[in-house]
Length: 461
Image (tube, rainbow, N blue to C red):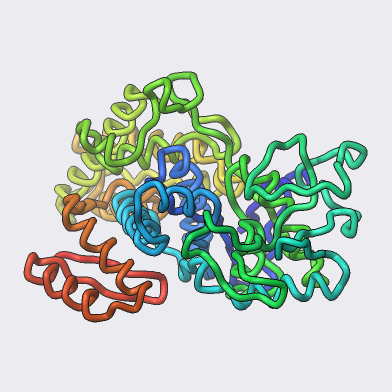
């Protein structure tokens, strides 16, 4: 395996050389759970799933961490709007996110940490930056990172140092690209934060968005990561700020390869609620599209190209999946002792394409050209039984990467989803009696819950 990936930091293709032989330390930016994730979000999550699946297909062990941002400006504002506690709101949307991950056959991360679970570690990291002179406190109990203390600030996003507004501050978790300013590591408590407050040496408050990933990634994966992924919208300010903090907290490079996926557009236009082209997975399922068709559509365009999402493409995706499923069915019907031809499987072509910065179009082209050849032989009853078995095994291997052929997702109704979210909120609030009551209630309906290190998963009993 000689996998070359496009590193956003260097702006060139680089060969993956794991820090630990045979093991890839992968960190992906997860959802901010203030709303249901939309298909643009899942374009990024599915690109990351393709990467992870191909690494595993190639024989590498992947240690994968995906964070959940459950405290920031948006989660606090939405909880106030809906009259819920932060735990209730984020528990509901975290449950929905995990249901959507399962429906889209996205492999679960080894760890799915929530920001609110790592506040003491964040406080310790911020204190280190203060002690080193790279962060400073303000009168309202906030702490800001001093970007002028880090000469390499702006390298990831290719910012012009002369345009940086040195000495001015921005309190928002997100801000415009033309405003590279000192950013908040900690936000002093104000009444609008409601129940979102934690103790710190400089005053009660809550962490800024950017410090969360720096702390959680290194907690699970160590001071240096092989790959860090996200969407292009994460490059600035989030990943630029995360890189600066982490380089100041640790001496090493922090990340070897930064990978970013391009935006998704719908019918040639930016996805927007005002344009009526804003979709979440439940919307598409309600319209009769299958989760695997959505997955294939989001998967089949190279991650560094804009993806134009249309209903026609969803239908074409379903047709492509159906063709591969029909191939599997017909291969199973060939008698084991049948004499005939033995075409080569395209393992080398598939690997060569994916080794080239995850060239999924090339890989799919090789698979469907092979499928076309097999169908021709099957139609003429000229495929040998041994080759049929080999072809079925090969299709299974390729679907370890694609995840659309031998997969039949299960979905839950809204009431069950709401109960799972309520139970998650109860657990966050340490209301164990209510959590156990909901577990028993769901068990009576044939839904079994399992609390794992990466979160609660469900299955039908």
